[in-house]
Amino acid sequence: MAQSTLLLLHINTSSSPSIFCHSQSPKLSPKFAKPLSVPRLLTARKQRFSSRMDHLHPPNALQGVVSEAIGLLQSPDPTWQSALLNNLLIFVLGSPILISGLSLPGISAAFVLGTLTWRAFGPSGFLLVAAYFVIGTGVTKVKMAQKEAQGVAEKRKGRRGPGSVIGSSAAACVCAFMSIYGIGGVEVAQLWQLGFVASFCTKLNDTVSSEIGKAYGKTTYLVTTFKVVPRGTEGAVSIEGTLAGFLAAVVLASIGCLMGQINGAEALICVVASQIANFGESIIGAVFQDKEGYQWLNNDVVNVINISIGSILAVLMQQALLQNWQTS
Image (cartoon, rainbow, N blue to C red; front, top):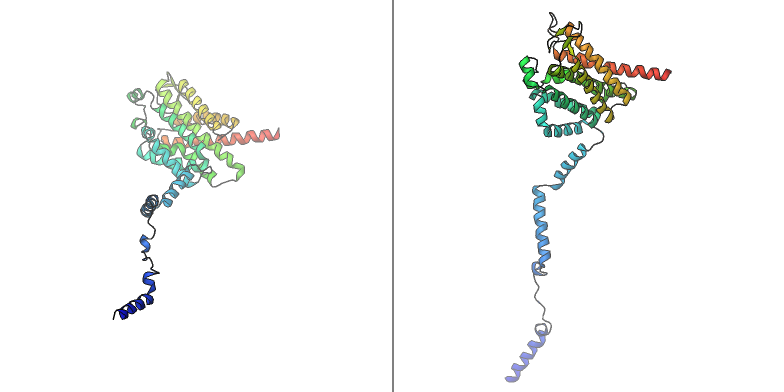
């Protein structure tokens, strides 16, 4: 009996050698096969977090918008998009100055003018218009209380409305449109720029001479008869105002020259043309304005005539000088 039991045990152990001789390690789940170290675990969590945030706020879209906006602001060649964006940024930053010199409808009209100017003549053209606005607004505020007491001050404390903005920039807008769409070709491109600068020199000459004349003019004369008349009379001029307007035109033409809008000879042409145009405007005011049958001839209409004369005169003078130089 004992022998048979030992024989059975021998047979069982020899028939299952793998249990004792070739035992295998238990297979671990892949999840726990290679435990992550602390740095790898932190990196994995960071990647999962970034993936979730990218899903909520796609960085490529935001960066693309910002990059495109910066590209438009720095664009060397003006486009409608860059003109609109730059103009909007400048108007927001300069809103305190704009509000002091323009009504809200006037600001809207000025925004259109600024966008058109940037598109046509770039930053240099815009700076010229900005210089005109700052100087013109400044002289309008000079001795405002005295002007109001005398009844010769501009309405709304000197804040200009859309009619004034349009009347002061009509010729410049025409030149800008002509330049944008290349009317006349490359040969006349500079003439549009000259007319643009001359129109603002003419208007600044008019504004400064009028405002300084009303503030400091000792004696004002009617331009057609040289009869002494009260300050603020249509068609009246003063030595102080005339001199101040001439100097203002010199300053603005010099800015245009420094900005590369015009050359030195063209700057001189702008000053001369502005002076002639303002003399003509004084004659129109003395002869027609506030007269029976000419009620439609208000200050805004006269402004359009005035700056148009200055712009056209500058172009004609430049062409005459050029032909004279070519034939000599």
